[in-house]
Length: 132
Image 1: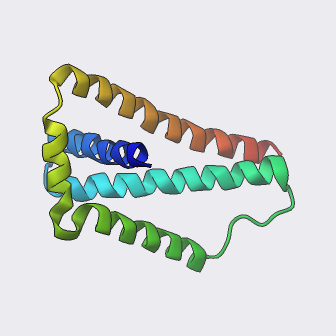
Image 2: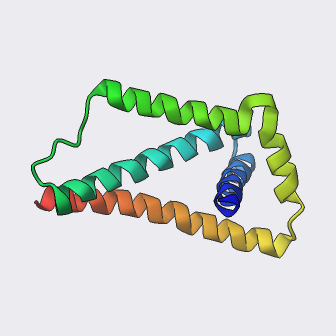
């Protein structure tokens, strides 16, 4: 479980660093958090679509707006308490800033691949959904 936590922190760190390199560095920690929430929603949505396509074609997986609103609120609260409460994100950034440059660069490519994989997975799940 500790490795998953560290990987999640590292994902946040790399997203934060990407936003820090951008033209607008304001609120990079919040943009990184929002990106994590979007990635989580894409992952959950694609899993629901795969469930509908492969296991339960007649299931209603859409849910209500209230359900999705509660999910987003829950993810945002979890994210807030992990990263923003007492500015824990600063400690995470300082911790990973100590990594050697080559290791950080490799990790950046790994995170880029992971984010791309989630995005492609989300698109592919919709493709399969609309094929049925």
